[in-house]
Length: 95
Image (cartoon, rainbow, N blue to C red; front, side):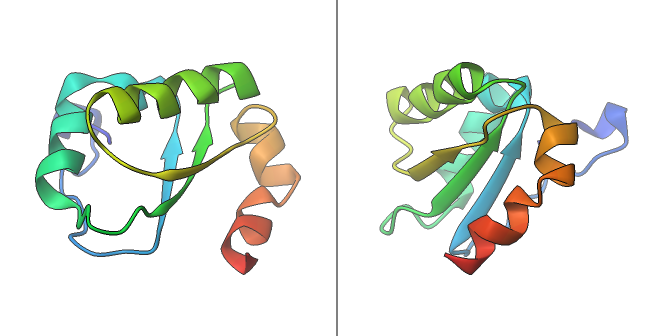
């Protein structure tokens, strides 16, 4: 989740079936706190994590679990450019 200083929003939608987490910010304490406090965690949302490599994305998924944020995760194969050019988001949302 982008910080206000980076021009992004710190709002978290309270309900949703899918989440997209891009990059290393998925391991930041502030981001994880916002998720924990604002998401409906009674249902594990499908979450696609994009972080450069599948291993890096797995690390972010692990940080969610360590913080008690239950997700059903998918890790993108590569970085953001590969993610966009490979149409992974469309495949994720179709499932």
